[in-house]
Length: 178
Length: 271
Image (cartoon, rainbow over all chains, first blue to last red; front, side, top):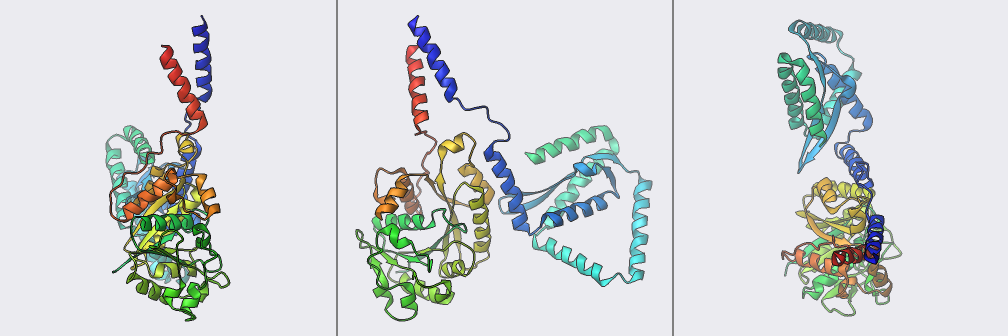
């Protein structure tokens, strides 16, 4: 009898000392994630505005080839040892058919010609060069390749089974997060 | 003799650079090495206090540079260990009183007589940092598992990587609190190492003994019972090229943990 009471007491005391279930949003993980983001900005000299611009330009570029969920596009830097990689994850809604792609490209080509004829304003060129320099600084060669690879994959799969691909991209998104 | 010049730096202030310097220096000297510590924190010197040598300083590094005394005259010998010396910073001058070239020159001269030259770097990334790093070929970056300290350490690592003279740098994580890490309230050593992707040379647990040892002017490595002291002695051995496993700080030492353990044992016995 007294043994049971003692056991009960012990269990209650133990449960008091037990730590609350580990939440995903514990202070440690929040700190790690905030640090990762801020260090990427520090290391690359990319301010949030520049990142936003990069994102916008990427969307503009990729939209020519695939129709994607622009709001769900994720752009992150990943660090593996000394190597920095730019990770781009885009849920593809639908592959564009050849006609659409050709049309978009043709539009762009004609635009370019116009620009050349117009003797593109100096200001604009200066801006572009600046952006290019920024890219070179961060040895983004590999990063760019990675982005391309990922996009290519998306497109290939897309052509055969659009519905499945959506899931797949979601999956890769998750993997990326991990 | 060609000594190794190691700069101890952090970016952020208050993470334990000077404490680390005093303890690693003392531990290296205890192990039989000839060690000199240079305090380059002009205007904010503290290394003398941690070593309990504040009353013995006659000449400072500025006196050496301005040729009011010879280099050897400015070296203050430690109370206990004749292998240990301090070249103190001037308290009345600012960071511009010594140049990078002058510090390099002093380090070169000291290399001939000492095994280790430990340079205590001021906080920040301005001229004081540049001066301290100038003569060094190795660096120890001190940080704590706190966001601001890790961010500043990352900045410092970036600057060290850009310096040709720095051949290697290692990370020392100070003020580790195992209980907070266990409850997921603090970043773990692994988290910090992964984020900074740097090689680790030491993990120092938070230890209230540091406060008393600072008050007494007696580095904690001289206390054989202290866990932090042992961790610092291990760092010294690693610097000397020995392979020493990192301390296991997982074992809980808090009162709560002890009570918990007591009750678990009790239940075990009841069964």
